[in-house]
Image (cartoon, rainbow, N blue to C red; front, side, top):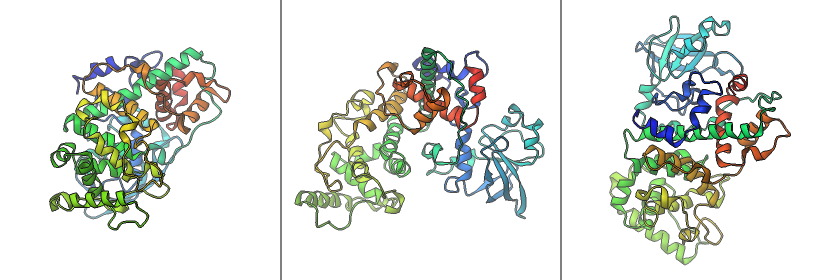
Length: 448
């Protein structure tokens, strides 16, 4: 990992300016170079709050079993992360109640000055990612080992905005900053966002082939928010190498993906055209011939979020796009060059049986742009390819996070020209996660 760090710094040269702040200083914990956890403490907070992600089998650093009776009340104000948690500890299941604090490393307790802060005097539990020296008086619960043994878990599946947070208002800490300096800061933050993505990909490549890492990221991107988790699960159930060994065309790849997804329809719809009925019959003919060992881990329909999904974003449509990603002319081995082209005419297909409209591009330009910026550019950096041209990144549409962050930083009368570049918009998203939902606006103003 350390070998590629200079490469990432070269690809994203202004990222260090953002991490260090205007006057330099120590890096933030979440941005420490290759500390093997390129995520945020908020990822751990969201994990702890959600029983779907929190490991079922936990133990203290001393090996005592831990059962979560109540994870605590998420504290959106200053002080411990969760209040009034109740855990059952050890074989005797002794009930311990108190506040709970979360850090990536155990020494975060000392670094953040909690020992001398009266707001933390009722903390009984210290949830950390990495095992380390215990804090006297606290029950330490490390997460790395139980998470590493769960093949279904991925930090990439956690939507940080889907959990409680509050946004401070009325401060406008960067209101008086020069417009050019605002843009420079935002673009530096944008480079840091892409560098962190590249770091995560490089970390994944320590245990997986680069093409498989890219395959998982592409499928997760096709799932967008609602179906990101099942798409990523599908990519691990059917690795790219295995798919290409069993399929000789996009249609055969689609049959494998659709069969494993649990979304392959069992009965024809009377409204389908004869061409569609023939196609689905061909899909079934290919799928049922597959060995039982391949079919056993299939997902089911309940794994997917289908209510309210637009036809163009329906998983059965996006899975056809995934099938084409694996075959010419958009081979994954070509990585960046061909995948950034997304020729619209290539996506014309007879798979119109879920759209009720004429076939159109399986991947819209907006989603294609998001894939280029958030996956292909970081992937290119993580694999040590030629440095990406960040000035030519496609500009993604504004969203609620971008607008909220711009308003919070610059006030209601700011000029949108400050963040019209793709990097600047990425930077607003980075600042949102680093400073807004963590209530660190005072620190932001001091640093910049």
